[in-house]
Amino acid sequence: VLRVQVGLANGGYGLGSAVVIAKDQVITNCHVVADANNVVVVNNGAPHAVTAIKPDWHHDLCILKVENLDAPIAKIGSSKNLKYEESVFTIGYPHFQAVPSSTFGVVKGLYPMDDSVIIRATSSFGVGASGGGVFDDAGNLVGIITLKSPGKNSYYYNMPVEWVQALMDKPEQSVNAKSEKPFWAVSFDKWPYFMQVVHPFLTEDWQALKTIATKWTQAEPNTSESWFYLATAEYAAKDFNKAEEHLQKVVAMNHQHSHAIYYLGLVAEQTGQHNIALDRVAKLGSLDETAAKELKVAMGITLKSD
Image 1 (cartoon, rainbow, N blue to C red):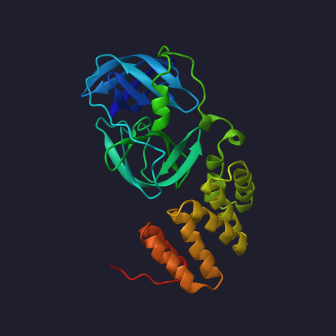
Image 2: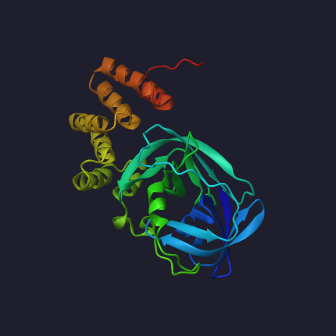
Image 3: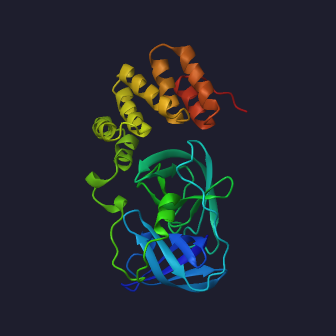
């Protein structure tokens, strides 16, 4: 994972990260190199000029052709084979750092999109890490650090490696090729549903969430996340029967969906099924210990200190 330095057409500059994916080729985000006059990739303190790009503007992925780059090549894994709660880690150059840094987390969301999945993970990242790598425990590249939602309790999104592989055979363009907006930079109404639900969910605007999630279930009935967000809105409205029905649907699709199991525990407790709620706590304990503790607190169970 290397650092990217960008000279912009307006006289400014930008920084980002990139992953070596082939001889003299690295992958980064297109938004890192958008409106660039010149781009260099820094390896062991030495700058290497970027002579061409292969852009996928819509998915915010750009392969950079780099002169005389002698650096280890990442082993490409699979984004589509990831599972919820699977461990991942990132490597990038956030906050103007001269050396790379890592963050660690687990997969919390896999959103189907264009023959692959957008990866949401708890491994956070800062400005400058865009274009860096997301790796599984075996060290395989499974995603590209890309963006986070605004505000507190941000959701961190990573683009899948399948789109990187599809981009390798595309034609090259000049470094200063006219840029286009990625899918996440268009107007709210054109965002994917998995992005539209974040703000109403985090701000507890349950009616707005229900409206968006209902549309999502109609558009993507086989996407477990669509039913999860609908169920959370129904739970908030105290429609516990519908919430449980849809949460069970989520777990049937994805038995490792810890957030759905958490809400099933809340529903059980609210409807007087305390023993079933305790079973949910036990199930959560093997998936997400933090969520299991939070469910205990929500149920009024006093936690003993270690």
